[in-house]
Length: 316
Image (cartoon, rainbow, N blue to C red; front, side, top):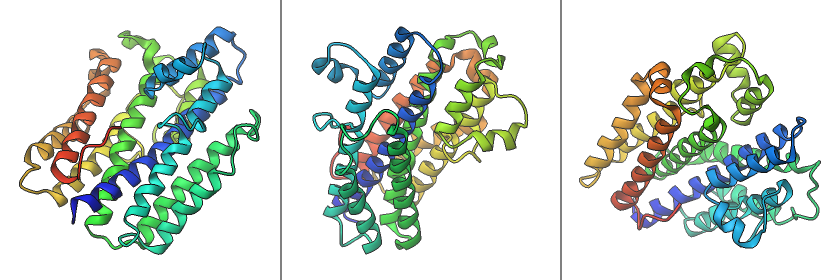
């Protein structure tokens, strides 16, 4: 496959997945702010969210302070923010347009329709009360695009690079969501057995479509320790770090070339640490430290994929 074609397919998938995960992160924050809490706690939550997606500094260049409406608007619709949901879907469409001959007509029409529809959502027409409907729409369009891609595209290198972008982006975003919600635990592993704050942990599970899965796996109260284990080390959980990196490694094995030996080794190293890791050891050594190292490794892996297979390593 031409590296330029692989590049467009890879980033088409990453931007589509990124838009979905931004919607998931915003949705759980909106649900949490429905609880009675002080304004300062709400501000800290949204400040943390902006920081975890790498958008706090650009936001503060144009806003004097952080507020919920301003943060939602910035991450959802702001045209000057290249990392907004709207801009992600626009870039996904641009990449799809560049390789229309490789995609099926159904795939192109789905991504193009998503781009056309989001232009109908305006910041002044999406009220705070209806913003969750917008997030559900973003998630639905991402699910639809993924289903059409899997159901209509030939299972060849084109689909492999599309899947590669999806799973690497998913691993990165799940780690960021975990990092944001476990930041307050520091290195005190004893806190992870506390079943308090049921609503917060159930909201987190729902944000990654894992609430019912948690009930099937553990059949017990929700504790931070089990939430971390499910979203990190359970291969059967579709959005877990283990599941995502297992798929990344398997795809890299399929598309390997003479330049990708080290990239494949590093992907295998990440996958093995998740496959054979134990949650007690992760918590004892520090979850925040583990997630920071994981994000650094996936960032390095993304750069290496760009060097080995794609036209250039685009910035994320």
